[in-house]
Amino acid sequence: MSINKTIKDRRSIRKYKPDTIPKNIIKDLKEALIWAPSAGNLQSRKFYFVYNKETREKLAQAAYGQTFIAEAPLVIVGCTDSETAASEYGQRGSQLYTICDVSLSIQNAMLLATEHKLGTCWVGSFDEGVVGQTLSIPKNLRPIVILPVGYPDEEPSPPERIEDATVDIV
Image (cartoon, rainbow, N blue to C red; front, side, top):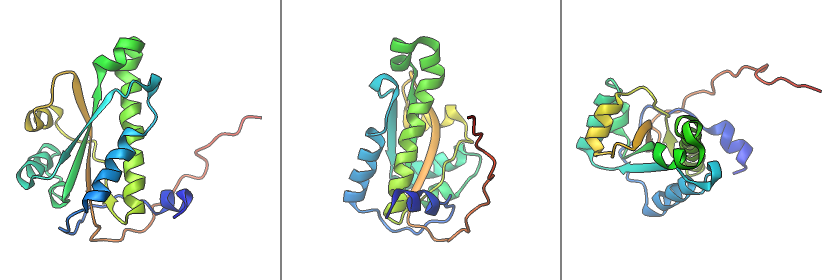
């Protein structure tokens, strides 16, 4: 699949089949996360892979009842590492660069998942404290995304895009 086709085929999936994701694809997802670019190559990010159904249900509740999260056989929680980012870039690193680092990694994982016929959905609306407690996340890490991953049990149509979202300056 070409990268352009993968980008255009990616959808936010909110219904998942219970099918297990093969270990080789899990390995590929982990590699996609860690090979994303990062500010100063500090890699100021951490990812939690959650397979346990009870824990996925707690994450769904932390996400204000978005129950589709628990349906996916895998949930990835992406966290910023503000201490690492701040060590090199100060406040801008801890408040911006580390968020970019996680975002780039998650985008890689979403595109790789699409290539493997898996669905994902970026979930940013959740109680950070509950997610942190549920996963015993250290204080220097901040969860910013919950990403359910699984085989889609729906085929959403492509959403409309704003065509004038770019500005050409010549």
